Amino acid sequence: MTQNTPAASPDKPLTAQQTPAELPPAASAANCDALPAGTLSVAQAQQRILAPLTPVAGSECLNLRAALGRILTHDVIANFAVPPHRNASMDGYAFAYDQAAAALTPGLKVCGTSFAGRPLQGRVPAGACVRIMTGAVVPTDCDTVVMQENTQRAGELIRINSLPARGANVRHPGDDMQPGDTVLHAGRKLNAADLGLLAALGTSEVTVRRRPCVAFFSTGDELKSIGETLGSGDIYDSNRYTLHAMLQQLDVDIIDLGVVRDTAPAVEQAFYSASQRADVLITSGGVSVGDADFVTATLAKLGEVNFWKMAMKPGKPLAHGKLGDCLFFGLPGNPVSVMATFLLFARPAILTLRGEVVTTPPEYVATCTEALYKAVGRKEYQRGICQQDANGQWQVKSTGQQESHLLRSMSQANCFIVLERESANLAAGSTVSIMPFAGLL
Ligand code: AMP
Ligand code: MG
Picture 1 (tube, rainbow, N blue to C red):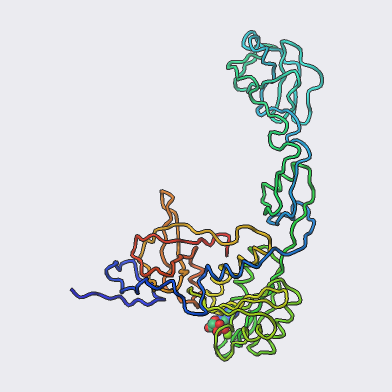
Picture 2 (cartoon, rainbow, N blue to C red):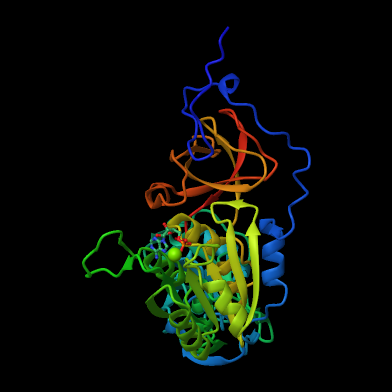
């Protein structure tokens, strides 16, 4: 039988119709661990980038509403009990459980009402109960609340149909927070619930870590900004928009330094300007070994540089280093490579500078519904479309062509399909990892 070899290439995934038997032979997984000199795995690069980093110094005091997503610099200790008083968890009647027999028959006389914020004044005599609303103070003479639905009126009396347990429907002081409790710890990223909790303690302002400042620019003589006319060989600069948007997700201060021409003085000037103002500088393009690639050489002249070939796809070249105190990432120019390397390397570093604990995006196990083309050797971040099936299991398929200039593949995708270096072609039904884009892009 003639083998029908598909016209697949590393950048051309196989179609759903192609069976595993049709897949081209994959290279052996042997020796995949041995990377050529100067080449790093994704995990090695992440480790080298993150290991020396500590959160930025400096804090600011913010109004509670401005503090969402910010990192707390100190523990928060409750200075009073929340709730501060014993209160009802139901609308109903408060009574003393010792009066239970009378409450069943003939009933208890209503001697007053306790509203939320307007407690009953005075005592509750024997044979009496109190009309009470949710959140209202339970009078000292009462210990139990019966819900309204389990009672009936008999003239002036309230009769209980079904007796609750002693102490039912009563919430106690400090149920939520006791004085002295550490309710939030330093380093906490404040969420909506945390802000509510601070408000419940009457806190109007909170001290949080300062936001890191991230500057970025694009390099390339072919790049035009939106609004300019495209000349022969020109393209519009899209990287500054993807980078800006991904930075916005991180809640940092952002400086857009525009497009920088492919000359050593222009790149040098931009480096200088950024290093004076920012904690991090991110550039795109100009890190390869082309004649117009000035980024790495300029960084070597002005600061410290590591140039790594990454065993990943997309995004092979990556420059990393420092310009004085400014952390530097020289990302490749291709639009998909920029996004992938930003998410895998720059984003975790920026989150670390913000003071966050979890910095790498979560991955989940999924089943690929179509065959995937993959050559052994580099870890691939293929663009995928994932969804959960009726059982909650993740299913994923490729967006199609995977070349790194195809920005539409990122736009169509909602996840990366993460394929390890040693992985070869995968048949439909294989188990893979996915990294959903939610919260990243
Ligand atoms: P480079 O890394 O500078 O060699 O660029 C690699 C590819 O990415 C080239 O095709 C560039 O035209 C393209 N590229 C570089 N920067 C950008 C950008 N800011 N927006 C869109 N494409 C870019
Ligand atoms: Mg370039």
